[in-house]
Length: 272
Image 1 (cartoon, helix red, strand yellow):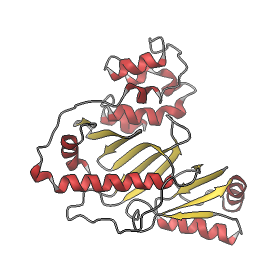
Image 2: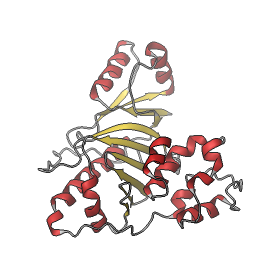
Image 3: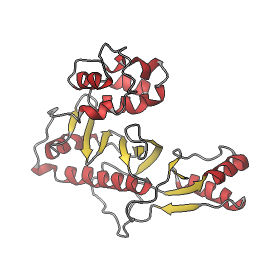
Image 4: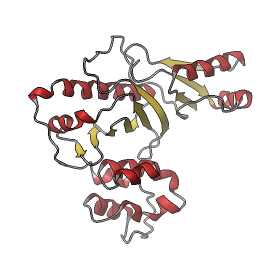
């Protein structure tokens, strides 16, 4: 099985690639190219033995976003130049975290930071994307892109179920364009501050331990997810995520709870 990582800065990619070359460790690479150059740099692919050789040779001297299983790109990287915007609310994206998706371990969870504040576009996204869930108090904007759940913070993006690293770059570039296009068209739009709908309760359930331990007072994890989705439970009532053996699931769980407005800003920043 091969694994893949990417980097917040190109200099970190260059350091790892130089070290691999210096030590004669075989690797593959995927460059984000021109099309995805605003949202990614490059990715390095290793097999398990090569990853062990790198760790033994250079330890943890590289700043990468994390390693996940590599399944091969599901789509090609376009060759065209990405559009630019006079009033750019996005800037560039920096991929900070790659991790297996809690809801589907075969897919990737991505957290990226943006160099600019996207929040002025949120009311206009809310006006044009009926599938979105807007939390003005965050501010946060959560929406489903097919089977992928994406939450936009002022300068952060949390996305679940990317197929692979190229698909992650594709998602980020699509968000960059959508944020800037809707903001550029704001004169013709009526901003909406309505909290209109929520992602399915199943998305909450997929981020729970699935043990049906009943510590929350509900008979099953699905019952808890439904009650939380309806506003009749508190996120912290799932004790195994906060103090038990399933704390590794907590970050993804908090992301969706924050996106739905179930956690306030202070609580989210403290726990994520």
